Structure formats: structure tokens, C-alpha cells
Amino acid sequence: MKKPFLIIVSIFLFLSKVNTVLADLPVVSSSAQIKNMTKINQADMRQVILTKYLKKHNSPLASYSACFIFNADKYGLDWRLVPAISGVESTFGKRIPYQSYNAYGWANGKYTFKSWENSIEIVSKTLREKYYDNGTPSIAKIARRYAPPSNTWERNVKWFMSEIDNTPVRFTL
Image 1 (cartoon, one colour):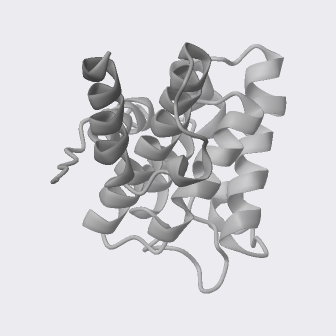
Image 2 (tube, one colour; image 1 turned 30 degrees about the vertical axis):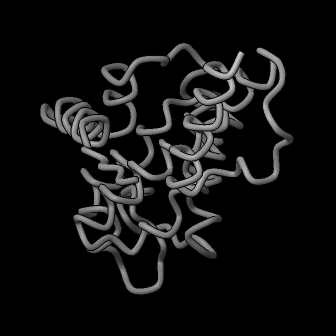
């Protein structure tokens, strides 16, 4: 009986080191709570990974990782898609028209958003409603409408998505 308790305590201590929201959860006593912790930790890991990746690129978007993930989940998108588009279009928000918050090449870079949060929301929502919901569910098909006549946009978006996915995250206890 001691062994399962020690395993659960060890897992809890490990996960609390990665700044998860586990401190707000009750002590684990059922498999349903363990499943909930897994969902929370996966979401947190996406934020950790994306923040680390964007910081590596000195991106002004690094502190908006949670916003990217929230909107990706809200609109049913891959959480790496919009950040990857910003990598292709503006080197992750570093090369944009002054105070435009347009890291996505929106309207050939001529569109001005109100804020980074506003830009992430609008781009995510539009990708869902104007692309995915209208028969353009793949990056290849999105590329034909989003960035014609580019032959490299699709490949570059996929490359950045892969790079984000392969960002190493180290934990220490």
C-alpha cells in the first residue's frame, strides 16, 4: 500500500517542478484525477515548449504562448500552426510594419491589428472559419490560398512546426 502512495507523491513532486497548475488540484485519489492531471500537464508542456522556442528566436511573441495555445484549442487548430506561420512571414514577429502586430503577412503585411492577442485571435479564427471550414484543412491547401504563388510556404510552415515540436525541454529535480 505504501508503494502506490510513494509513486503518486513522486509524480506530484516532479510535476510541480515544471510550474503546472497542480497546486490547485486536490490530492490524487482516483484515476479520473490522474487523467485530468495528464491533460493539464500536456497543455502546460505545449506552453513551455512554445515559449522556449520563441525565446530562442528572440521573438516578441514568446510571452504570448498561452494565447496561441488557447486560440488553437478554441478553434480546433494545431497549436503550432499560427506560430509557424509567424516564423515564415515575419521571423516570429521580428520583421513587421511598425506597431502593426502583423506577424502573419496578413493582407500582404498591410493589415494592422490592435494587439498581439487580437492578431492571434483573428488569424486563428479566420484559419478555422475561412480555410478549414471551407474545405481547406491541410497546410498544402492553405498555402495555395494564403500565400500564392509561393512554392516554399507550405514546406517552411511544416519545418517550423516540426522545429517547435522537437524543442528539447529539460527538467531538474
